[in-house]
Amino acid sequence: MAADSAQTVNQVSEIERPQREPPLRIAIRWGLMLGVFGLLLWLAVRTIDVAQVATALRRSDWRLVVAAGLLAVTVCLVSCSYRLWILTVPLPTSDGRRIGFWHFTSVYYASCAAHQLLPAPAAEVLRTVHLKRRHGYTIGGLVASQFVEKVIEALALALEVGMVAAFSSLPPRMIVIHRAMCWMRRISSAAWNAATSVIRPLGAI
Image (cartoon, rainbow, N blue to C red):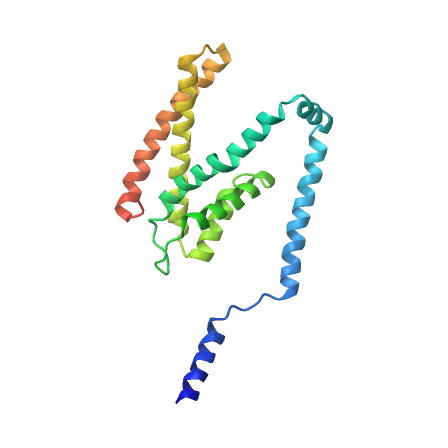
């Protein structure tokens, strides 16, 4: 009986053991990724004035540049990840398990890095595909949560522009932009109300 139990355990472990991908498939994947990266890098070098960028960097205060970079990759990205995670974690999954915050944050960082190299909306597409394949979220729920997140982002941006306009004098061109942002805030509010009225009955929020 002990032998039968050991054999059963071995069979279960063989079933649960993840199968390794063929080396050729891995090589093709990495080759495509490096090829796309090289093409984008070549296009960037052709379209960007490297000398002008170098001159701007030489004249910059590197303390402020480093501080801004650290603030962007820590506080800003973690806060944005937390905002989207709050909207994503209540969504139903195929196995009933919810993704953790730090795992979601790693996915968010990776998709934002891809967004810097690929055309928009690369981050949203990659994030949706990964969460669908690895965690069983539905495409509709993920698209809805990211749409609501973009509405919140537009509202926050409109409020920031409004605060700047309230406490400083703007040139005529910026006044036009401020009015456009005010209209964007109104449209975002209407879209938020419409989205929540549709998603809330489905139990997504």
